[in-house]
Structure formats: structure tokens, C-alpha cells
Image 1 (tube, rainbow, N blue to C red):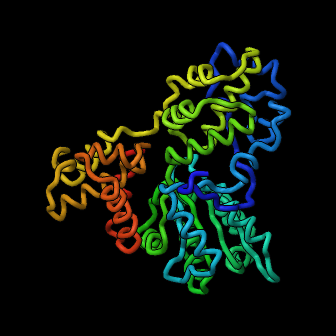
Image 2: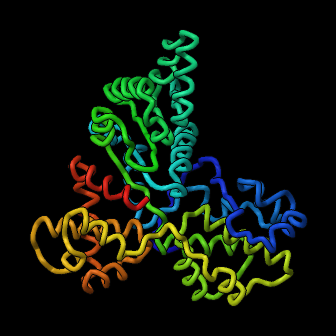
Length: 388
């Protein structure tokens, strides 16, 4: 395995895979008739396994039921290690993992919960819940005049994990209850782990409380992780192709792990129906044109960052050492790495053929400084919203 790729050994529930995206009108009807189950409608590893019988436990073979980490997500790994080593102190809490859909936030949260439960000690009581369910249970507790029971349920815990907290936006009464719960748990040094698609739009006091802890962006997998995953997945499907085709696939499929899984599984289904052996030529032809539209061109990223700072794109790409301009450049590099899917080498070339080590340093600079600089966090959040 590529030494830059790690696997956080979670024991969470399997990822949900959707194989509907690869279908076209000419093949979907055949597939629905000939492949076990309605693959286009089903989700989950079981549905894929039943449709492609004989390929074994694909998820375990591909990702060891863990969380694949490349350089783009080393910060995630560091925080998880701190959590399980007992190094997250009150000043680090709460922890917020945020990132677009498909980056594995829910899988990560479920894995943390299951891993803790696996090594549970007496009186351990961890609670994992969707934010929408937290709101629903609170509404029911008010109706039943059972708010004391509700509070015991979520405050008498050893860890609280809440998924998709952006679902609480606009729910004023629920957010007030949520904030009291956070304050009580964190004051007692109880770990609170949250996830969100973006930094949530909460009232200033609650927002400041959350970002004063540890906020960790989860990025889509970089090319090294994509290549590793595709190679392992094809091996599980007993498909052998040239390394050049793997590199091509990793460049084309600039997507999330579930999306890549869906496309590759779709290719295998189609080859079974067409009774065609998958070789390098077939593989490349199938993938042709399947570019993830959500990846943002680096030119657009730099243009957005430049406009935010009232600079010209040429100035951002230039060599001026003006302090404000240098910060804008570092932020542009940070978002280029996070949103474009380009390698460090490609980003370095775009920014005036800079050294890759310089590009890596700028990314690390932003990652480090935002931990202790709430104004920088807010600026990054404001820019990030323009990419969604």
C-alpha cells in the first residue's frame, strides 16, 4: 500500500453505496430484469453483494471497514488518535467534522461509536443520534412534559455524537436546548463529536462555542486514495487491468468513495449483462466522460478567493510578499487542494511553478492557523459557501 495512505481501523456499519448514477436508459431495464434485486433502487453493501454473487465481502476487502486517509485528511486521523488516546481536553471540545456529502462523516461517526462500544467499560454510556432526531425527541418531550427525561438521556452520557447538525438551523428552541447540553457536557470534560456539511449557520453564541473547539474539514479523497481504492475494488471483483488504466481512472473519478464504488460496480454489472470481459480498453471506454461535476476548476477557485480579498487573479498567482496578499494566496492554495482534485504538483505549476514543498507548507499553514483563529475560520467558511 502507498505509505501516504492510512486506514483508521473503525468497526462501524458499512458505507451505503448507490449504484444508480452509472445507469443509462439503454441498460437500466435489462439490469433490473437480469440482476438479482432492483439494483437501481437498492442501497447498501448487501444489495450489491446479492447482485454480484460470488465476489465475497467487498467492503472488508476494499477498505477493511475503516476510513481511508490520504494526505488531504491527515488532520482527521490526528483528531481520532487524540480522542482514543484521551488527549482531547475541554479546550478542544466540541469536535466538528465538516465536509460535503460523500466524504464519510456519518461512517466516521458510526465507526467511533462502534469502536468505543467494542471496548466499553462499566457505566460507559455513549449516545449517537441524528440532529433531526434530537429535535424530534425534544419536541415530543415538550408535548409529553418529559423534558427532564430527555435531558437525562442526552446529558448523563460518557460521549455524545450528533450527526448533521446543520439540520438544526432555524430551530430556535431546539438550538437553545442543544447549547445547554453542549455547555454541561463540555464543562464535565465529556467528549462531544459533531458533523455537518458546512460550518453551521447558528446564532453567534452557539456558533462561537462550536468553532472554539476543534473544527476539522473532511475532504474528498485525493488521487492516491482514489487509485488505492479502485485497485482494491477491482481486485475484489477479480478484474485485472494495466496500471496506466488505474491512474487514468483515479484522475477521471474525482469523486467520493461511495460514488466510485457505484460506478465500478455498475461497470461490472454491465459487463455481466453484455457478457464482455473487462480489460483495459473496456475499462477506459466505460469511464470516458465520467468526470465529477462537483470538482471545481482551479481557475474558478482562485478567482473567487481573489475577489474576496479584492485582488486580481494575477496577483494571487504572483510572487508579492505583501502580508495580506500572501495570506490570500495561501487560502487560494488551501482551497485548490480541497476543491479541485489536483495534485500538489499540478497546483504548484498553476501558482507559477512553485516548489511542491512550498505548496504543502501553505496548506499546512492555513490548517494550523484556523485552529486558533476564529476570524480565519469565519473567512474560510464564507469563501467555502461560494463553492457549494
